[in-house]
Length: 99
Image (tube, rainbow, N blue to C red; front, side, top):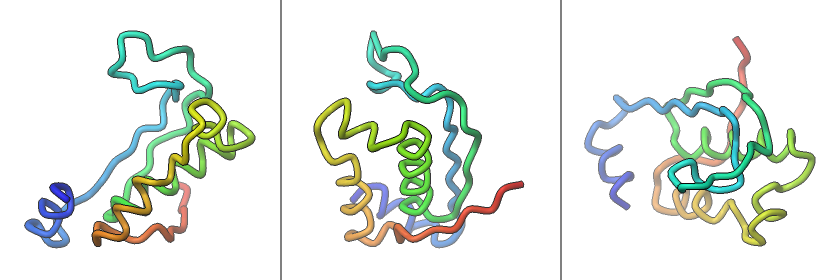
């Protein structure tokens, strides 16, 4: 909800950058994040927070060969994406343009 409020405050003047680098099983803020399960995949940018997160999730799972987050943690990693879309933070639909 806080992210949605901040994005609405700056109405259309917000951009998002996601760096897909050395994706580890646990958050990189953990003392032991583990060895990368997916290596560097690039940088994504978008004006839609939900679309960029969905695109990143899909790319990582595709590179891993299956849903890496379900495989490692046994939970649906798309819960946050679905909830963010419900509160109006963006749309999960996306298209990728490689440059």
